[in-house]
Image (cartoon, rainbow, N blue to C red; front, top):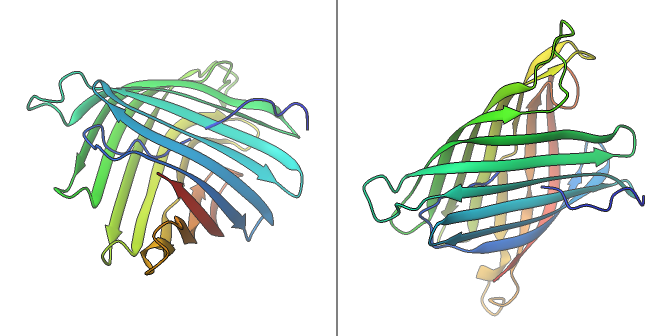
Length: 236
């Protein structure tokens, strides 16, 4: 698939602009409904001016048949003030697959509220975004390029770090005349058991678990529930 030459990324996790946690990982998730493997690489880095997050997805069955990416930048020049919980966010998202070619090219911008517990074992964010999707045609044949998106993200570590529960949800408007819909929802909660907590395995940064993809009008019209089993390796 020579056309899949670009990196792609989505949703998910804006985490918290205040957090000093740095993370990057690679995930392998087997979709039990579609029978394909999705490989995801994601990275989050905070800095003095905010934070950067991106992820890249590659779907294979068995060859690479689709890819998607999102990159998000949060600007927060006022981290030492009482408004440190508020960030300005910009984002790009895009992708392609073997059937339709390029799709979902979109640009977003808005405001993000983020927070965390004292020990950073719990993080969350809620973002309201303007979403520009070039070339989108409405259900009545009119242009509908100007849209919106609401994104929520959470991360919870518990059981003394043995387990983690994280995920995101996106709700946005995007006209899809071919399926007669214009509002889309997707959420991917993940649960991981962190094997590096085993004595003697501290340098083996492996987690086992998976996710549950909950969607409405995303893959097709209607509600869908797609479980996936997975492995995750976290890089320090």
